[in-house]
Image 1 (cartoon, rainbow, N blue to C red):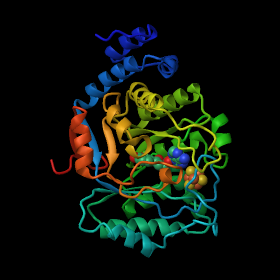
Image 2 (image 1 turned 135 degrees about the vertical axis):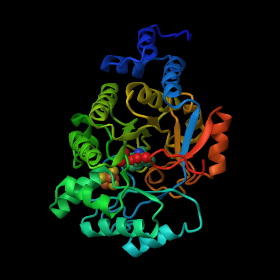
Image 3 (image 1 turned 90 degrees about the vertical axis):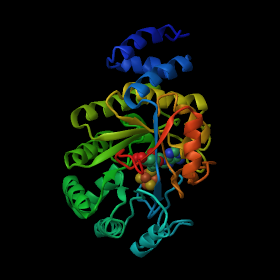
Length: 362
Ligand code: V47
Ligand code: SF4
């Protein structure tokens, strides 16, 4: 049995060992405890209960079709206004060409997100999905955040449900977890005032799950949010997962301040990054997986996080623009062999998965 240096963790430990749900107040305790090893130990109990010694990764490719966006989120260094220096928009042919650059390589997923473009028509997204699906029939298309889906509904005059159903029949496989940021209105109004609300984000995911699409969930931390906001975010995700069961993975995203309106803020620390992984694992008792996105927290912290609740390191990625626009110093790609050796050194069993956690090459 672990000896906690923070006595407040004893009560929480009893609940965790008994498989009981943690409360909002427990979440605050976890967020504030200085006993990071105790917190990690608890998260590891749940991690091993759910996923044993397995540590998953995916061979995937990211495509960001445009950085032009009608919104101006204060934490975003990726977006541009049309005509601004660095703005780009890929025509459909360019998207297809970028996708075919990877011909001959083994990968199982395209991860596609972009800005809310002021003039691209809804058909562009439908056609992109259809063509990728036709030309890469074995590759799962995880595309368009809830924020983009809500925007497609707005520009097409269709309901969110109809948009999701049409995209699904064009070949969409699942939704990525972006756009969640922090649900609390008070924070959202400051960091991304034009973005759909937290409730709307949750509602798009609920509708996606009802339409038979799985999805992921993220939380952007390390900016102006407080502990209560982080715990509130997790509790609201947990409540939706109770209802639908459609979430696959939770991914805490470490805020990168460079080139953003918050450039005066410091980068997140190793303690904070591990704490968010562990809190995610402990509070989201109904999520099957917790992902350490190595691009955001670095491969070193991601490796250690495999003992703090994470069971997934995301993937090979190859080209990533969103975090790198905001000063990420990580590489843009990691070879499968490197990912595997990091996992093995951490004492875990590396397993290549597809988007929905079926094993690849098993
Ligand atoms: O929604 C934007 C975040 C997200 C910054 O579903 C930033 O498997 C840090 O959601 N610093 C997009 N983060 C990326 C995303 C994602 C990534 C990997 C895997 C999955 C998945 C989803 O990136 C945005 C926003 O929350 N973001 N700017 C920044 N400066
Ligand atoms: Fe646009 Fe997304 Fe950046 Fe906000 S975070 S400005 S919605 S690209």
